[in-house]
Image (cartoon, rainbow, N blue to C red; front, side, top):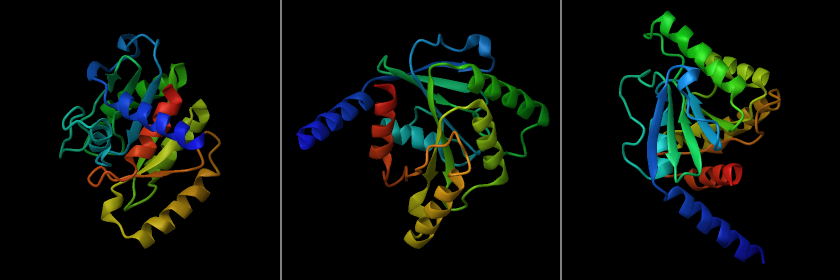
Length: 211
């Protein structure tokens, strides 16, 4: 029965995200990435888009991913292992002008190498601040993901800080934009780490990818 199946899926998702989550590695070069033996789900976005807050809320932790008031603090690929089932990868934030150009170049090469050569990577969730929508840097990252043929999905953050009218218009425009990007999943997910909105659909999507 459909209702019984939905209940089992819900129970599995709840069980999965209740598993122990541990920090495994902070990699600033490809040679020290964890062995590519488990599925990986990556989170990317502009600095200060709310990436750390979303990861913490998603996993029901308060301080697993470091939340900083100084944008650009995530300077490596941070791998978190959830229940020996899959890795969550916190990618370096981009678009923060105060970071040196040399550091940005190193990050760019690392991210490009990771995206192009990581077989277990199931999807990149690209976070966009729902108050502002796409920026030029977001478009550049989407183009790189398209070139690398990496499946990615837009996650709109901080939905609690916008009106319903603004969000409705934003989702419509984002959906239209995504049609131009071959590697993009066609439907964005609207979230609020503060209010918990959209976290269950995001968890369900992840569970289906790694299950």
